[in-house]
Image (tube, rainbow, N blue to C red; front, side, top):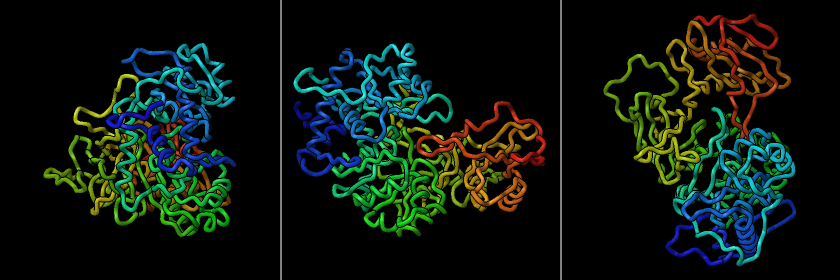
Length: 543
């Protein structure tokens, strides 16, 4: 197979070829007891590219290339299948291997995937729903492999060509496939690479413990390793002790994780010795409580940095690595090359270019008082890392000027550091006043009897909505609903306080740790307060 033309925009598979040419004998990936060099990886990717090209049905030159679904854990098979699909000019569809049969059916049917690489469990589930998947013509346990030169590969793809369909977590309904181009994937690396000091360099060893079917693990983790020709340490064991063992064994220098990982590591024995080689620790995908960051730093001596982004932005938009200091609770500042605005409910721009926009007609009745600085507004972004809309027709993508509303609400302080408040759709309106669930969750999290909480609005006949809290009690610390309601009353304005506290054993989470609030919502609208029992505490609304 020939190298891509010099004038053709490269894709991530091209970066593998470059690393193989530059330092082919250096390690590329460590997985369990195996070590694969860049030359070995490049050879395996090429063989997979030819194998995939032979296994998918032919398409017209101008048609969207066949889709290849990959439902594997963090293994060499996933990496080779993913990069092989890109090298073959196909579209990859990473899939959570833990999906149920209905979830698999939706993603495979919606994407029209013609080939699946999956675990034994996944292959068994797909067999159950095969009648609903007419486009699926081949199912493999590992990436198919073939020698050159038969069959020929599709024309080299890069730039604006579709690279991957990444399905959102589906917190607001059925998952949607975000269409990310090769250019979007590489643009996000260029944006992160403009941060000083560098987040990842060629001499780094990066822990790849985040699920590779998610944008954060796929591009911020694996993609960064490929971009720089660094070393990746693949981890398919979710146990944090195993993670620390691999960090110490391979002298990992870059940790890319989610809050639950850093919390578990902070409480692990000998964590300081295990993380002695760490140079950078970055957390994303879900809000990181300042207390968790402080515990990790105290336990390891390493400062915590936070990033924010979405699947649709490939994924990183902001980072505390951009500013001079990492403020507690902040998501930092926009990456170089990312344009970011805060936009109010009437489309007024509240903040742009790192500065607040003066409001000559301020609303004197605004009592949001979430924090000093700008009023909260929706994060609206523009940049080359943005997706092209949702599969298959590009709906709900960036507007004609390239701007896209994230659906997340944030405010900026006087220094230009951003603080995430909540999702736009999760805003609670109590008698017309804004209640941001995350603010209430922070207060609940400050009580020693609370391990985790989730707050959402439920319909109410008098106030429109009322605040309901779902609480996981802290082990060994009995707490009552009355206690938590009194705690909230001491720390929140009355209209923000929950009128109901329900204790649960656990909260439903996505694969990367986000709470799935749609699974907590009552099936029927909430009426007047119900009598209290052992699991629930209700108080009159009084709003």
